[in-house]
Image (tube, rainbow, N blue to C red):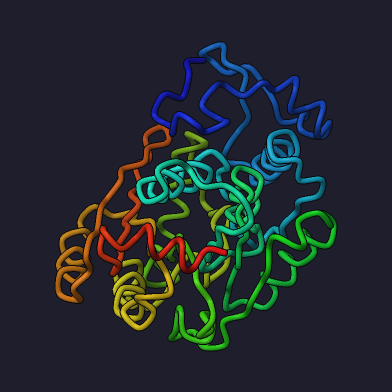
Length: 312
């Protein structure tokens, strides 16, 4: 297998998986590992159980997460792609710091952290950042809390907070005294349950290369993880509009954008709300391309001072 050269240079997963190493971390994984037609050692990524075990092994081996588990009904995220988002945020902060900032003084906000808690886990283990994970789903937060309870060294660095109003993103979460170096979000992509099911079926078929009559719902995730009214465009639009109310409390707002066609409307809105700068960074994992959209209301010449004043 060739190096995954499209991943970020600091991504720990840019090289092929060492399955012997990973199986030593999670022995059960060996039942799902095989040699494919291209003579590559791999797993069947259309099987949720296989992906979950791979994630457990990756999180244990690379990030020292001793316990990680999610209910079958929740989204099982690809770890390499999640790590990429973290590293590109680090690059964004480095532009203001002069180097990639590390340590607990850097506080990040993860909108929609989900049951898997993957972004805070990787962010803290990679750079030592403190993270606040939020979600509207109480069951997801409960599971995320169980992950923390089994990894006691993470408790001082990662906090959880429920968003009580589904119509809001930053309201109820960011308190007057809060200062975040960044916010991040992997928004719900679909605009309805029907389109989510259709997309999930297509994804499963592509991965398994066979006819699938019943889509694996646990491969996709719960409602709040997969769809919302208006889909990704509506969610990020709301996020941009609401970010104007917290323009001095977050240095960089960011979000993933899956659909390229949404960028024109989103960047037009960013101009309209008078951001001082916005940028789009493409991220690729295999054939899948996503984008990090980032924006700030802090003028470039004031960002170092903002950091000095607000990162304690």
